[in-house]
Image (cartoon, rainbow, N blue to C red; front, side, top):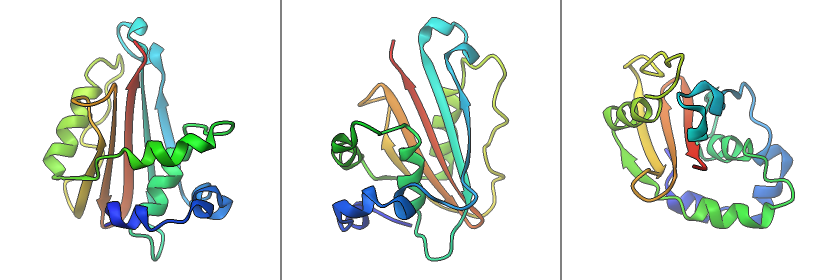
Length: 155
């Protein structure tokens, strides 16, 4: 499981390296755009990114790849400051599941929760929370996969 020190040890070139930051085998995601919520003018969006664990990855490479899905082209100079502002606060599986459920509450078609069966939880991180931002970014590591949950609103 990674922490802030692992992120701070990254060189700037690594964040721009296609094979490090924009290629993760098995990575897939589901997006729930604003019209998946009631009401749609709440301008909420959820993206759930998952991947089987890649050998030798402590989760940092997966997390960077998941964050790159937000399309940083043309604004890459803001990526490192955005990632640096993450809390890297350890959370339990219960806290992860509770936060996901809270942000998915207004979905018209509910998520199947929990996102992962309650076995094999290694650790979790709260990167951004509703208490400090108009977004929620959570990371969870299980024995068999990584999950990144991202919720935001522009309302």
